[in-house]
Amino acid sequence: MSDMRMRDKRVLVVGSGTGIGRGIADRFVREGAEVVYHYGRSADGAKASVETARQAGRRAEAFQADLRDAQQAKDLAARALDFLGGMDVLVYNAGITMNRPFENVTVEQFDALYAVNVRSPFFVTQAVVPTMIAQGTGSIINITSIHALAGLQEHSVYAGTRGAIVSYTRSLAMELAPKGVRVNAVAPGSIAVENYAVVVPDFDPKAAGKNIPVGRIGSPADIAGAVVFLASDEAKFIVGQTLVVDGGTTSFMAIGLGVGEPMNAEFGKGYVPGV
Image (cartoon, rainbow, N blue to C red):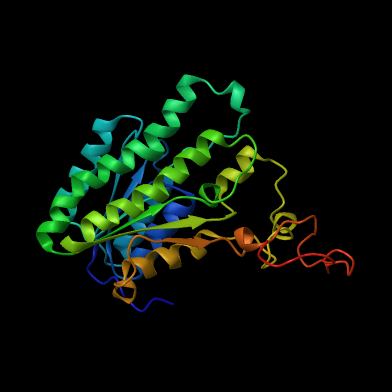
């Protein structure tokens, strides 16, 4: 239930036509914000959310931009600033994922992932920061991934882009904090979104949840709650951090045991903690 923490805040959520991004933008609307949605290809989800927001008395709009094009990324920021009359919160959620053997990655694939996942957030943010600095306040939240924190085969390009966002977030936060602008990131774990059914037709969320310590796969609402918290005054002393929201996935010590399995009494003999 909303407590209207974001009443009248002006928010742009990049990559909010579907999935996690749409869930984040919808949560800001429920918290009282004026929101610009962004979509890359299909407008259906973003426009449906805009209509719902307007029916609830909120100002909202949806803009299209191909984030592989740096100029379109900058133009998206300008259109959002013009519509909102300023900006209090920027959430960059857009991203391309890909798993492919390292030796099979093409230059075109590499460039596409880095353009959308790294270059675009840089220049969208660059376009809105002067407004935030002039206001003396603002919050920027980058959505990264637990792929930035742990390795998995065939994700060398994608993981590299996600790791870049963690480092970029930390450094930019140090530059902007003295100017009143907070920068943080959220690293989601496994989250059930519409595209799972497209990429993995036989995807079973219950089975996937068995490999996560909390016993379930995450939802966009889990990420939206973390993002709104970081954007709120409750988090005003949190700067340059990456908040991991993964149900315990990256905390689990993978030593050949399944989640919840007891350790064999013989396993720990001779083990010296910290060595």
